[in-house]
Image (tube, rainbow, N blue to C red):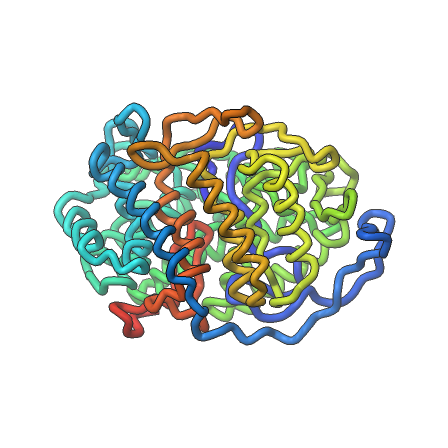
Length: 501
């Protein structure tokens, strides 16, 4: 998920795989050793003390999900509604403004890169909208070039464009997509290689290689290895994965004595720019996700062990229960002292780590309580009061993401029921004549709408929902793996047959 619509104080994405000694998107293992409830995380729910559960045997994921065709078709229809609005009003541009009928560029003004097209590729493939896939591939082959004299944000470029071109290639086998992807990654590499510490600068000029932005969020430092590792394996060029791994190691070496990380770091000095250990919240979230992902996708044992170390520390210092609901407090990363009780909507995408894992399920239920209260989940809440403190909703997909993951690993119909409620509210409150748009105040009645459809809508919201209900034949439910931006990096099938990855 992306930070683009978030206020600077709480920018972007999610800890995809909740605090566990083992776990991840391709789920295997449970939460690790049991720990008695303590004063820091005792939690009473329904009058009983809660503790972290011991590890369970890894669940066997189904080879397919039983489809609910009627609901899957409704979800597909709404994706098509949003997609047709983009095509009609903003084709070739990064994002559509569906209320005013205009468009905007995401990375650099005056330099469109067809972001929504790239984001949509594997969703279109999974939904068997093959004419639209061909349209997108044709545009990419004829129009998309990255010799752009402008500063691009490295993190967003990696998860959205590199990831989108990779999944598009895996879906179609079109070598032009892989070539564009490698060219783009080559242009990003100076952000890593120019850094004394190995942690990337925030921006790089795609034409000149000039870098800028020395202080950046943790997630932006450490959310590259899945895309870069996949690219290295497809091209045989180890530079990409090596750069991403070096950045991860540089962060790990700067952990506190209690094995927590702060949220922002200067990549030139290697010094932390704040003291906030924010656990599942952005802008730290996907750093942890990608540690586990490197193990799941590439069997990187070092990343697996780093994940386990941080997961144990997060559970030790940051779990908090309030009125029977599970949350993760913000603490001083050096001491564990409480510094905040806000939680981001992006953190709802904490995913199951053992199929029936109680901690993951309880966190989802906490956010379901927020959905119950507001119908659309606000950007940020104060969890001790269960009140919105950031009242908009930038078409956030994380709740649907988590619902899919939990249903995928448990088969519990509760997750389909709640995912369907999310979809119905999405349709009721975000739909406009020419697509879908953000909500500016979920507490108002009627809810007030803005004028922006983020490109990640085409990569995430409808894809998570469709995978939940469709039993999509082009997705390998037994072995699939999706990135933090919802890109299928493993488990795509081409026209029903097993494809690359």
